[in-house]
Image (cartoon, rainbow, N blue to C red; front, side, top):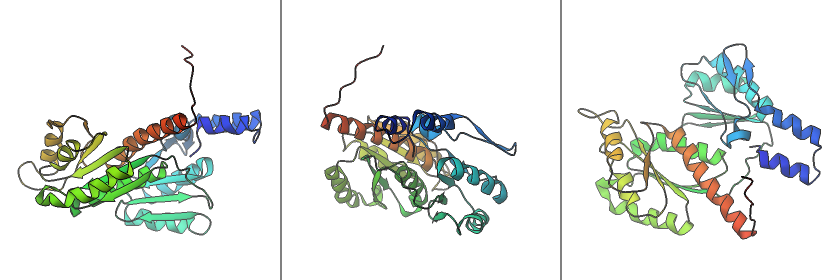
Length: 272
């Protein structure tokens, strides 16, 4: 993804002119699509977070038109919560001239210009799920975090029903130096509290609508995570894998940037 810093670096290295840089920065403006969508195509430039097209409740044709503008202006479009009809229409429209990657478990499609590359940031994220039924939400977080430049390590079905399964993958992730964990759990939602009690980095809990009966639909998991006594745990909404992936990537990328600056002994003077 383009970034303000990246544009400034290109100017400094004389790879682009000031006029070309100005054109790139103008992408911060909104782009209208036939009066039914207002694309924030400058979001990645401003926030280091890509705009993600939420396909649910959009028709396949509407989704295609939005994706066309995103790819034309940004180089890539991430489409979440796709259904079979969305996938079919996106493939039909874009497979011939663009790269179309379908992530079935995450229900995400990524359409990009051929040769488009995501810049690796050095951020590292660990993603864990309590059960196999939680994987679809975890995969949302994984795909989004990877498209934001992070390396993602993952281990699934390591919940409290068999807690011994957790320790080996958790040790591996700690040794790898992950910057933040995303822990996805339904039912009683206990796993994020356990992980938070064992690691020294931020943990993002994601309650999942796995479960039934009293407190089902993710409500018990959400309340359990919000009531956790393990400090260092933050919680997103039920089934919000995309939100967890974005938050984790922002944290990991900021830490990676600090590591890089420290390595090169970069110091910034306050302008205030």
